[in-house]
Image 1 (cartoon, rainbow, N blue to C red):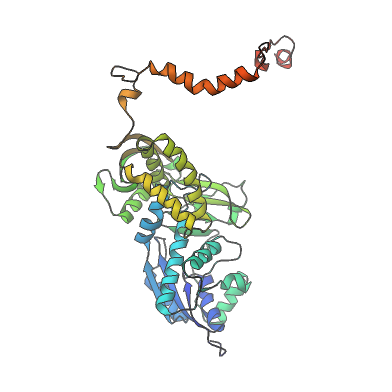
Image 2: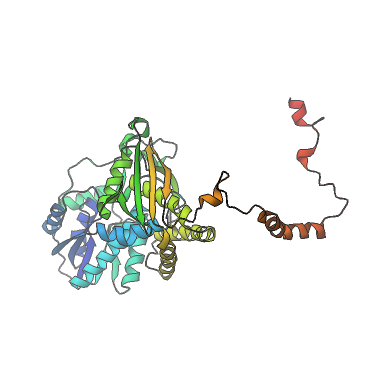
Length: 424
């Protein structure tokens, strides 16, 4: 450690990879005592105890490991599911949900350790730096946020040399050609051949789903039960939130459900080609949206569609801990008081298709919808309704259209010598 002025403790969000591993001695050289925080958000990672020990071996004075899976589901994923949140109508926000809770954990450990700063391993090009720093500032504006990789301007080769000089163990596994991020809600894959949007994603880009063309020819039909917008059971069996998502990830993933290949508009100003795998998320959002169609009124659904877009944008852009998000969530929570029931989903060859739905709170009425025996709709009321509903248009036309107008339309002209006639 540098012999200069001691700056106090810094809490580093530590993954165990090269970037955050070399950040430990770098921060020590700046005069900080390094405390690490490793978050378990359901990622397919190394043994968490081994990661903690690696941090201590490199020089961290304390290494914390927090299991955040349940908190992430209950406080971030479920609110997003209730909002049917999809960024740009497609992306289920798997990576975006993990950043505010990681920031929350960093602040928690910083307060516990008496730290003066927190740190992360993001580059200056990514959007996670925005999410982590804005969320940290919202939770504790007094904490300094340090980004060693961004501020250091080192290449990966430079990092490797630095690691060797400081006896930092470098991962011996073959480096993936992609940039990967995963948690219990899904997996994000970018870089490599995916940077050219003309290239088809190779099989190696996927890990949670089978190729739909190679999926089993035998479909699966499952039933998902919701209570106030939150899934609580699969096929009638009550499941813990972690077990429920894990179960659906496996069931839907086996049928190739949840593959998303998109070019998204990043917050930092450029477009990025992303490949996501979210089998459980796609299945749950599909089911939840269907249940809302029989439990929410038309005007609430229309207003909620705008709110859902705003919810997704706020999450994506790092504004989770904002006054607007608080207000948006209050609206969504109110709508979900009646969203209880069961949805039947057909999983087959990459598709999750709704087959049926039922709810004790359903405002769908058979006697009003049917055209068969049992029809209780008052057909005679339609005449007056149409007159009143169309009155504004009728009045406008009467006031502004000359009586001699012919109302000729281009489509009404005879094809006697036009281009279409000649072509024929």
